[in-house]
Image (cartoon, rainbow, N blue to C red; front, side, top):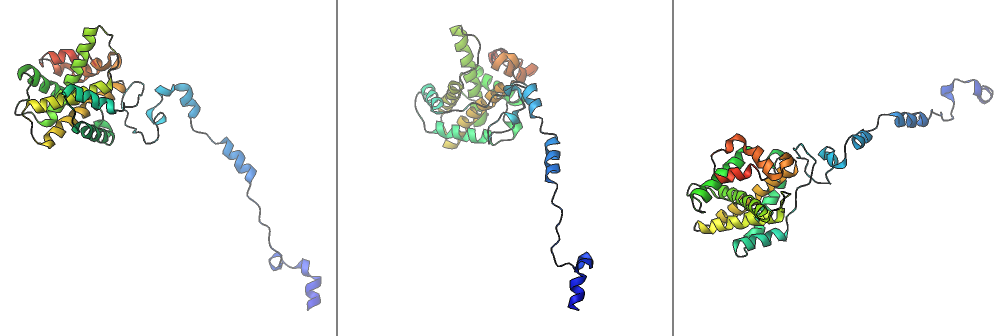
Amino acid sequence: MSGYYDEDYDQRPPQHHSQPQHHPQPRRQEYEEEYEQRPQPRRQEYEQGYGYEQRPPQYNRADGESDSYQGGGPYRPPPQYDDSAIRYASQHAGGHDHAFQEALNTAQYQHQNSASHQQYANASEVQAAARTHAEIYEQGNGRPQPHHSPEAIGQAAAMHAFQQHHQQQEEAGEERGPPDHQALMGTAMGEAMKLFQGSGGGDNAAKMAMLSSAAMMVMKLMASHNSGQGGGGGIAGLLGSLLGEGGGGMGGMIGMLGKFL
C-alpha cells in the first residue's frame, strides 16, 4: 500500500495533497491605481472660487468654533471681550463692581451656546429695545418705568451705548467705521448699572439680568454686523435694515439707527 501512495502521489486529486494551497494575493496595484483615480474632494474648486474670507464658514472656522454664520458677506469671527470692557464699564458707571465680570462671562457663555438663529439680532428685539430706549430716555428722563423688565432695560442700555458711540464720532468728525467692541460692551454694561441704580436698585438677580442682557444685546448686534447683515452701511445699515419701516415714530433713537450701524 505504501508503494501505491509513493508512485501515485502526484496523480491524486488536488484535494488529497498535504501541501498548503496558495491563494491569490489581493490585486494591490490595481486597487491603488483605482484609488488614485477616484474623485477627490472639491478643495481646488473652493480655493479657486473663493478667497479665504469668502469661503463658506465651515472652511474658515477654527476647531470648536460655531458654524452658525448666517450672513451674506465675508465671515469675520465674533469679537472677544476682555478686561478692557470691564474697565470701560467701571469708568462709565463711576465705580467698579464685580458683577460686570460675572455678567460678561454669563452673556458670552449663553451667546456661544445658543442656537444659530439666536446669535444674531433680529428685527423684533431691536425694535422692542428701541421703544424701551425712547420710553426711558425721551419720556422718562433717563429713568426706567415700572413696566420695564430688567432684560428690557439692559437692551435699552445697549442701544444707548451705540447711540453715544455714534454721537462721539459725529462730534469728532470721524468717518463712520467699525465700532470699538470693547468700548461698546463696557459702555452698555456701565449704562445698565446706572439705570439699575437710578431706578432705586433692587436685588442682585435684577442687577445681573440688566447687565447680562445689555452684554448679550451688544454681542448679537456685533455678530450681525460682522456677518455682513448691515451691508456697506456698517452698524447703521444693520440697525436700519433690522428696524425697517417699523422704526417710525420712536423718536431720535430710530433716526440715529437708520444711519449708524
